[in-house]
Image 1 (cartoon, rainbow, N blue to C red):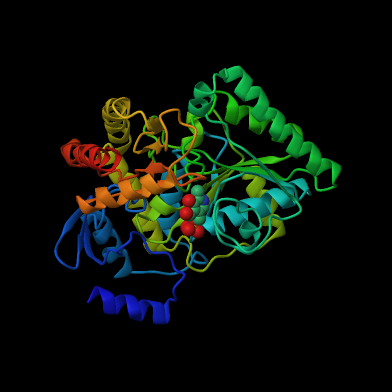
Image 2: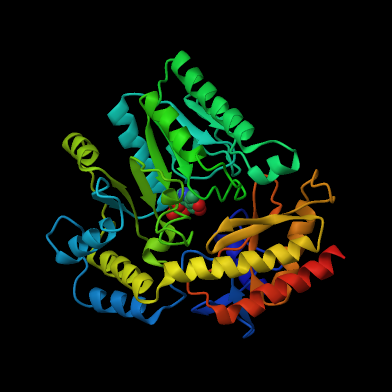
Length: 428
Ligand SMILES: Cc1ncc(COP(=O)(O)O)c(C=O)c1O
């Protein structure tokens, strides 16, 4: 059945639409942190961040059903659902970030934030990290560094590397040294943009640096990058598509971990728990400027059904204390992973925060050579034992573990026990 489905998929969706795992998973149901395949085998989902409050959460299903059965229209009519939701969402930001524009995807949100930055500054130059992904529109294809893309980087784009204090510690470099070198690189990009007549429109940063492989950045790194960009007249876009809604545990938004207040916060994935809901949060002044020049209208964004779902997600995050859960479990997991990696010289220290974590896999105990092959073997061995996760980073050699926030302490023995067994099998 799975084989013939694969043939039909290739014949319709094509061969290039990515599929995970050597043998693709044919899933039929999801509930909480569990996914079940066509053979009735259950997997612990330690990968998916879109079903933030859990797969098929009954309150989300009911919010969708009840709103869809009474009214669903676009935002050109007055409806209290979208305003109720916007008020609740905005209450989770600093007071200056008090306006929201809804969209359907993280790509649309980032595209819009870049467009607003461009219009506000009159400049075109964009700074982006050297291994990142912010979406798939033409504009974003021109700034993509972390995914295969036919389009070259735009002339108006400069990239910079995100420093990792874990790597630096291995090389005997101090935090101060690392920070100075990293900021010098950003300043060089800014100067080059200015010299070439592009000016500086924005820097866009994913605040967990997940595509980059979860580097541990110096404390002041993000605020200082923002300061350099602002001094050059540019705006700061925090991409919270991965880090937002309590994923990092210590804060509701990833940028808050860094002590930054961005000009634009872009959101997506977990916002609608699987329903397409995304958006840009910004200041009243920036929205006013953009709104007075452009009629922004987005047919499916912020409908009563989307708003009902998005609002229910926020209420569940509160009612089920999911941010505190992310922090508490993140700490327990971090501690157990420290013990695991200490016993295996080819594994790097645990990375990430809250319920987004992993560790690097190397070919040698000196941590000179990243080992994508062994990382892939670990992902497969963990899957074979019934747990789903993946890999990230420029060399695909960091395990990517990012379960729904509905993960509970009772699931940890399976998650961590499975990882320990797989590491023992693959590395020994
Ligand atoms: C950090 C980040 N930003 C933006 C996007 C694009 O979001 P979407 O796929 O909803 O367009 C993604 C998607 O993977 C992402 O990881």
